[in-house]
Image 1 (cartoon, rainbow, N blue to C red):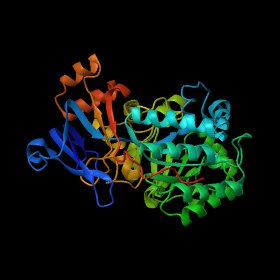
Image 2: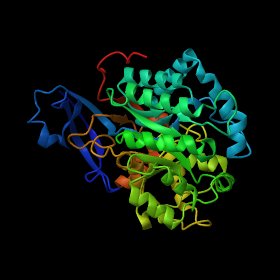
Image 3: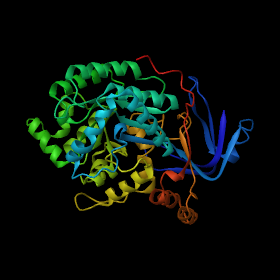
Image 4: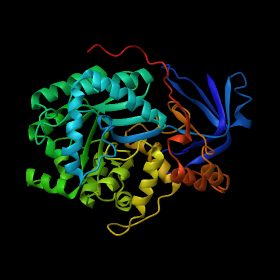
Length: 437
């Protein structure tokens, strides 16, 4: 066992976006019955220290311990596409993304890219991520192998895209489904890894491929599903041409059995109330991607509409359409998106709500509430140590914080990767080598 003393941020009820702070707290970590390193106790140092006097304790004065961040949607192969100029989503895919993703057919290229990607997640305090690979199985194997070596909780999948895509990234319908099932059997549930069935988006997938994806989702009900929906008006018009009988873009996924718990759809900008009700009734969730939506000029997620109907959502970097790995940049962009009131109702998201969306709320969207994204007893012990004095301006601003909201918002507005002094992963020693391939 090991203990950590510092100010500690957590969510007493993980379903609610209200945080609590132990100003002088103790976090005690130890193995559970299955050998996982989990939170054994959380509370005030004065109350817990006598019970755990024999446990080695690391003290972080002037720091803040918080749950590791959960990124609901990120593209591993787009690390080098970040910051690429384009006229919009579809030209950006054609001119930058697809040409770069062709390179991931090479195992060596995928492996070095995975090494950098995982290191960048950890450097930014992201301890759980739902991740796109490319259409090449080699990219999935490389990413999972690297994540496993770090004990990271990572969910990923091979992209399905058998039409409307260039040579080098377009896959074969039947082979893509066979590859997906092979990868599920190889990686899903190994250590902290999970598989996500990953149709890129409706225009990239034939009806046969979407049908096959839905059949795999039914056969393996504990795997995840990830895709994109209603991100861009041109994309929506394209889907309408491809599926003229469908009520909406989102309904196409439902038609093929791809709407259920553990299904995460990025963006969800142009939904109506019937779509929102479908999200709620099926248990699917939205990955809100504000830096990407602002960068590509796609639109603004309607928080008021989502809360009125009541479906799950959380925050995502969406690198490389998104402009930063940093959860602080993403939370700030989400605040901007919430405030926008010309195309939808504007509102001010509280700092605690923003933080919840990137931790306990994102975990709830993944079906992992009580597992990650929080520091309550029983949660896996993934956390970050934040240094609010890391820059002169942050030190000056946070010293004047008179409430938890003021402290959190100062870090959201002024923070970046420098705030992350340390990232702690619960499973420092994974069970063994990668599965045979």
